[in-house]
Image (cartoon, rainbow, N blue to C red):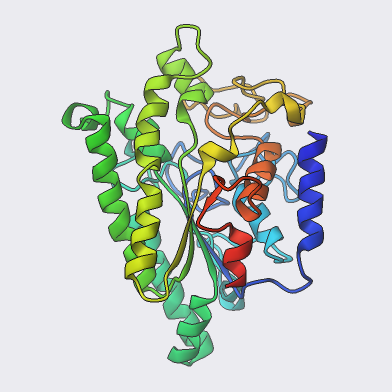
Length: 351
């Protein structure tokens, strides 16, 4: 744990006084949702304790005990305040960026429908179009706004729910009967490619695409399928890796074929590899909070574990803040060449 915190402090010392980019736009699911689901009719919302127990503003709709990876990346990029959710971002605040992420959202529109309302990636992109219209009204200069958006950082992390809350939920979805794991990865990548192209057409140029976490190692995945004594569910991890393996060629395609595109792939599998006990983390597949049998989320108002920095998982799906610190730190400044391809987010911001 000490080494993780020391690395993060070193990164913070590298951050300049002014933000390194004019704005930061965030697309994703519950791993980076910061309140967009609060007003929705859905089981996928967490605007209650013990969520946010270690966050400066308490429970805000973040699916963690503290900051998300997007929050921390914003800090590393030099922003003084957290990027606001689309649900509440208004006025001049949108010039710093907007967070569109939504718990239970997926690349596929139907993903997550069993838990209620959610904002799919398609709808997040539509919301970004609304933001751009608002920016044009504020800035009153199309050429300026276009140049402004080209300098911003965009992070996109999707696919988590397309597996756990779609492909591996056969009681709700037919996808696992319609597609082999390899076919499903191809179908997802084809749709994802179109969605990322829409983001490019909106003016995005500096885009970091995050791979999917090893879902077979989550408490939810373990509870659903068991492991026969192994640490993770190999079947799920292998399927997810088929998707992740296609992200690097996708980034290459965009960079080689879209004028001015500067896409990069953040390899979560590489970043989270290794022994977590080296960082003082001893509970690798047990949630920190008391879990609802219905949702897999923390039970409202029940006290969580006190030694949260020793846990990988906050609930059955989402990592603790200490893990988010580590992941965002290495996404921002890669420790290994395999962490980011072709460049890390720190370098992307400098382009």
